[in-house]
Image: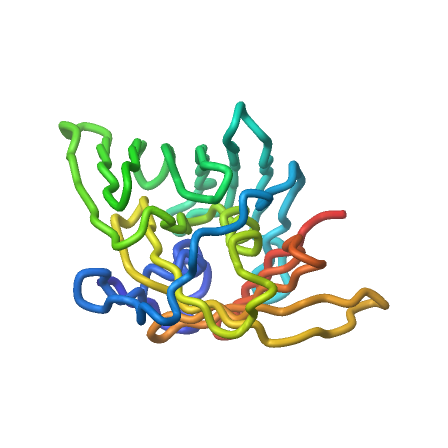
Length: 245
């Protein structure tokens, strides 16, 4: 799998938050069943929408707009981000994720314009994900992924509202360290991550709860106001994602 140097700048940043550089493969590194996350509560999501401001070493590097809304008995999460591309111009990525009330993915689709136009659709059934990847100038490429649980977390490249979904999926009553099966669709990478409750802190008179997300060699922090994600921080690359008020 691809590995990114810790300070390779924006080129490395474009994919870093998806944790794709260091996810252990699901077939060879299965989560400890004692730590695996149980099915989430039916009262899992709330409707929300907003913007994330993307900073690299304190400087503006992009923006994402997103919305999570109820649709029938399930939920739909939409997001669209724009960040500078290493080759020039702006990389635009959009995604649409359908979820059951307890957080299991049903259908996911994404599209991107750089380096070439590409898109994919994924259909989930039980612990199986069937993806059809479409790259400009090439025939469709089918892929299939298998997981031990239907509760697979989608963490795709440059779509940071997926971490807002993660903050809702985390069992805040149990706290501790919890293992999630993960799929990064743009990289075609399955694996597992560990999300750990770190504790509370006060920022500008507001008490926030902090989660630490870890894979083999990458770590990032999530700051939450209750279960509402307000900040993502990657210490190794000085990348910060701030929710606009």
